[in-house]
Image 1 (cartoon, rainbow, N blue to C red):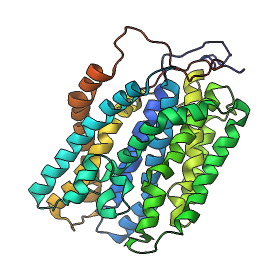
Image 2 (cartoon, rainbow, N blue to C red; image 1 turned 135 degrees about the vertical axis):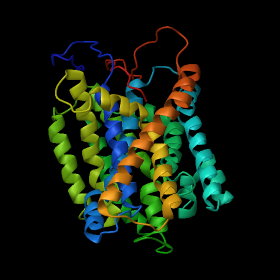
Image 3 (cartoon, one colour; image 1 turned 180 degrees about the horizontal axis):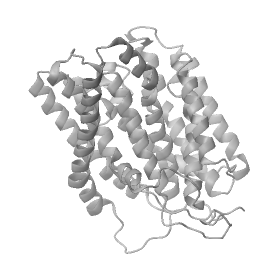
Length: 393
């Protein structure tokens, strides 16, 4: 059985780097992509050419960013999975990671809505608070309160199912892993065809609400990407990786983005980029293990990755309610709009630092860390696989 490799690139049984910083650094990129997307849909540019140019460049970055988070989540959780760990311990760590930050963001959204005179629909706000809102095929519900929290609702489903997913993925024979990865990518291409069976009305912008919900928000559907990340992790862990360099995987992802920008909407949301994202994540992990080129290992990227969850939760509150405070329908000249966007970007990171420092890190230290001074290395329940060290999940 092929083994993970050391930073020198030579196989060595039991080789285990301290951690995989490049994977963490990718989170900063994913969060920034989501920000650029949501800034576009604030329609801040008064000049039509500037608005059209920005929209052309960034109108699909949001789905790519969220797809990155889903695939990366499955990949990392598979790497850090502990053999024989009770499911309740895993769920406790995930709850401590997700719930407090979400509740804070929910409360901030509620306060801002009351302050700015935006009505709160409690039939949507309550499901949002309990992170079940992405199960409802209504834009008033899945896009409620802190708009971006629909993805957390999907992640909660992934976490609930992870012990089952983990056993299923661990049972796949190594020589069949690539077939499973290809099948999961093919499934993302098939989903829009299934969505065509759903009602065509009401509409959400240019696509029927039920269909955009099924393709983008429905937790069981988005679980395809999470499981794809898990399968890619096992591909790396079992030595079945195809040695694709990170730069080549990133080139394929750029091609996927171009494809997403030029095909019909139902396929541009997830299908066009799910495969390339999975390749980038696996190539990035391999680059970390072997010490080859990666742009994501710098201190800025790694620290940004650590703050990315808090940034993701807060950036839309800054963009949306900041725009409402300045004038909900107001637009600006190109220089002013760019300046406001950069200010919102910086403010979002500053607030993310506060949320991370004051809520996320203290609670993770208190409730999510193992009590013992040392624990076994993180591996799947498979004796023939060597451990790859954990990344903050």
